Length: 314
Image (cartoon, rainbow, N blue to C red; front, side, top):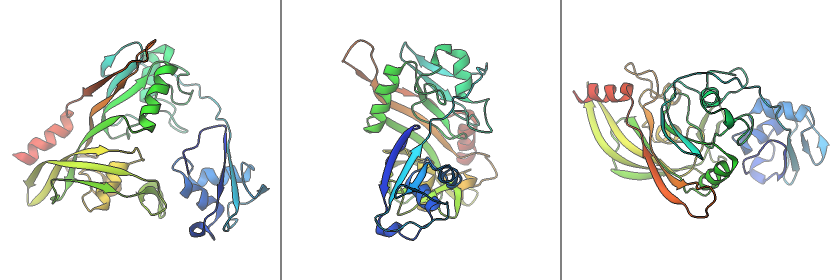
């Protein structure tokens, strides 16, 4: 099922492999955006129906049932602008490129209304408010809280549409640096496995047959031996943008990222996953012109990751 936006209605026909599932579980397996708890809430308010009839979260779906999903408009958040350090590596009239530090959440969410990248951007660029939606002004893609590196922010609706279309059509090239546990055998390769919510832990993602298509290519940079353990430094190139994609894919082939306690890579020498968005390449939005130019930006490894590498190489 395609991604859903607020104030949108979509109908889904139940297929054979989903017949017999609870309605709330069926909904959460159809999209990354709707958790089981949110699905249950939408069902109770009548925003999700089976064959145009109200249902319960525990209702069972059957083959050829028509599930209608209506996502109500989200009430705008009154987001505070906050003065916070921002590493701006490029800025023009259309976009800003930020080198995000690890530990910073990209946008506010229920229970986390401030202290995010968006709050800092609203202070640095007041006109950003409302671009691309009140909830995530200017944001066209995300990085996990504990992933560092480059992120693009649109400064106007034209740039937001331009960049969003590039992401949708896989025209934005992203390069990540990751350190994996274990010795990766192949010098390069591709992981093509669908990703969806982990059926045993809804706060995590996993490779599941009912997930959305996800492709990650990689190239080995260096293999390292340290204290009787082996590690592999790679460049990772995600062709799709699923939640936790790189982390889940490498964990699925038994090479979790060093420091990634969520997906099996916990390490005593680092308290976050070794993952850095090092390079972005895309078509620069140019106002008032149909022409565009392909540009690229790079950000070096931050001190914590570079320091760990030096320890391992010593």
